[in-house]
Image 1 (cartoon, rainbow, N blue to C red):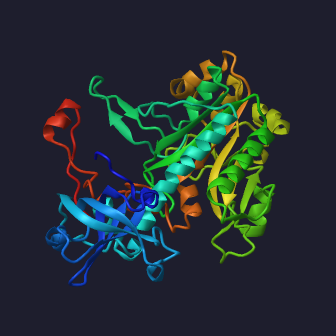
Image 2 (image 1 turned 45 degrees about the vertical axis):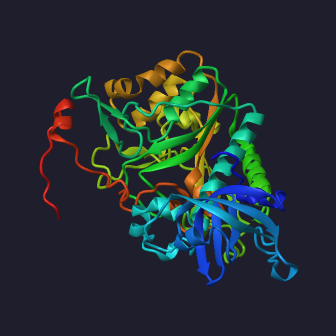
Image 3 (image 1 turned 180 degrees about the vertical axis):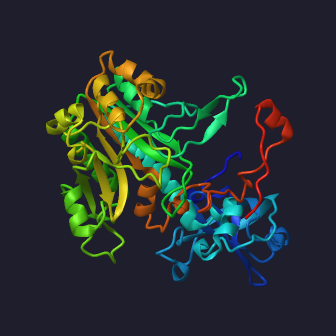
Length: 474
């Protein structure tokens, strides 16, 4: 819009005629005068249509959530009407003319209130309305600022951002994959990445040395408050490092972030306290203890580290009937054991006692992220899969690309991934990650707004060489 002035800039245009583009937030008709709150992405300002104004007739027609271009004069408020604690509380916009850019039906819920009181299904079906509310709007904007702050920090540390593929190979090292049929290769499928784990390690083989990415990850698993089928990680990997290097960098990054963007919050303890997995289970009964001394204070951030996790645990056949052997990994098959336990790994001795270089960063009782130093030699990675019961031919079929890369001069490396949605949930004092995602799914993994997942046409199925069978509804 030509010559448009943003609402937070109006204070710089006292006694001037301006044009704003905005939504009608609220309207109060007092007969001779009509008062409005106009809203754009930068905030709100009070507008007033005075008696005998040429704009009065059109002002009478305006309703909440109409989109308008308003021509007006920026006036100082009389001293008795100043609201010092309110944005633009010392000015108002005298409405001289209005162009209606788009009308709005009556919204299905009150956007000016806290929409958490509205049923979640209704909010998600009309998410574009929900995000107009002040709280959700602020969540989305703070998410963008946080991502930028993290990028800025890592770039100053010498990291470069690299995008990794969304169409990849299905490999049996984590949760269920979402799979995508490959039309040009009938009967074959891509997998959507559960994380960039393999790619980021291959970047270390490629000499990138310091990589990061704000990465989309997709896992076909049951949803809950702090999980979604698709979610975002702050993912990074570093070459020529040990565990202390990675943990120290992440502490600095989190401290820098909180200091710059959340100065009202207090980090309870610096350096972050550390506890072993064994100590955490014995003292707290879980591996993500809440270190807060006062759990009622929303502005306390109790970061901490959990270290020295067991590498392997006994396979629960009832939970995973497809498991190949009696052992499975606890976190990540690409992790390296602690150096003093490397011989146990290679000799397949004391398997249950092998500790890994895994480290989890926790915050206020949530696992914020996890990482490890990796096995960067092929014989070591192969041994992990052998312990898990994988046959040699299956190891080569599923992970041969990794083994080949590690045989070609891959340096020692390690990294971490933070759950970015979970971090934002905690920083914004929200109850679940859906409140900090622009277009989230329900707790059951559905998108009411787009009505997905949904059926596709018979023509599409035929092109993909897929035949579906009817499933009776339970």
